[in-house]
Length: 85
Length: 265
Ligand SMILES: Nc1ncnc2c1ncn2[C@@H]1O[C@H](COP(=O)(O)OP(=O)(O)OP(=O)(O)O)[C@@H](O)[C@H]1O
Ligand SMILES: [Mg+2]
Image (cartoon, rainbow over all chains, first blue to last red):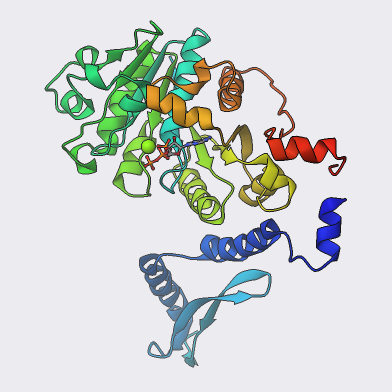
């Protein structure tokens, strides 16, 4: 009753809800990330596989994580020169 | 063959050593044969929390380097005949032992003890890797705060990568009054976020400070709420089904007055 009163009359959100929301976002990021070394390895592996099929522009080849509202995504930009097979 | 349990957290100062001491004493009190390993090389503390600091002759590094026999380095606790402590070296650092050496040591100790509890240092570097190397099971200690939960999540990810048995969560220093007014994450919030099984909830308790002052684990104190929580964890570890009690508020004078005036509930 007391708490409801306080909340109706303009008290801010319960701070634990703020904590939970912040944790949700930061953990989404932490869980989805790779170390810089692992990301570099991933890039090189991708490059090897893709190069079997396509001749790609290695300079413009980019792989990175990005946050999409509710989840993390791995986004790759792979400029193609021509196909190999 | 005994079981090796590592007590870890990622973040420092959240209660790993306190937890190790209390669960160790609790298990010994319940009749199990227990060894405690202080794996926090360079920053040893389990000895003082247990009140055994005056009896150290050899340490973990002496044993690993073959300079002392394990049985000469183990300190017997006079209060419980079936509890022994292997202290950390104080003047060395984490690189003085390797994960392989720790694993061998823990394996040897498991032959003699029912439980080998390993107090991990904070962090995710070599000290942590040493501490988890020989463990069959991990208890992750976290307080209901953003930074502690975040670090616990990181540790859980690493433990899964090492393919340890699934880790169990101990929530430490929870303050029921703050939970009640929505200013502290509650048990369900923490389980939801970390998605691991709960094995204990230890309230914030002055008795912890007092018992640490004296070097007598709170689990020995029948009047301590934290002590009761540790006794319950002990029973769960020994395989008993112990229900989780509802969080009780500390009876502050203010709380009692509010209740008397009918302002609560
Ligand atoms: N439930 C509790 N109630 C009150 N005080 C507590 C509680 N748990 C731990 N403490 C206090 O918190 C402090 C840190 O505890 P402890 O040394 O066990 O943490 P730790 O995780 O081992 O730290 P480190 O990372 O430095 O090894 C100590 O002073 C201890 O007395
Ligand atoms: Mg400690």
